[in-house]
Length: 168
Image (cartoon, rainbow, N blue to C red):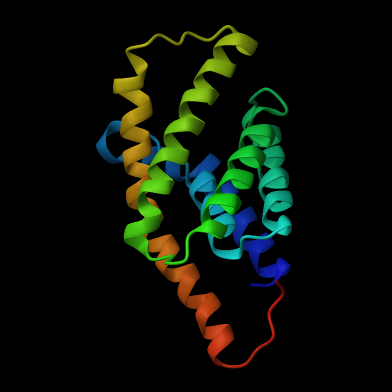
């Protein structure tokens, strides 16, 4: 995938996430589409460019949503580093193998974001939110991860199969 393609898709995902998609709440929670897309790019591309892409995406999300500057940037970057490291060790990158990685990464992200929001913005975060917010959002993010992972994997595979040179 080219940088221009990833950038255009990311800007579209961020804009959709902050404007239209919060009105659609599957299972009563707002999924984090940007996080799912960044995680999928990190798993599929597994290079340093995807970590930079994650940090820039987190920064844009911080700027546009009013979150404390640097929270999403830091969390996206570190979770992307972890996803690149884990996916580099896994030989079989099928959906059933990567789905638990997405659930765990989403759980960690939601938990750390809640704790950091509590510390930086004095927002309320209590242990019951793990079962009320963190786990449901991680589950919904995992459901959203499935079609995004399949589509982006096929796009990358199509480039390889057609003989188009791609960056690694």
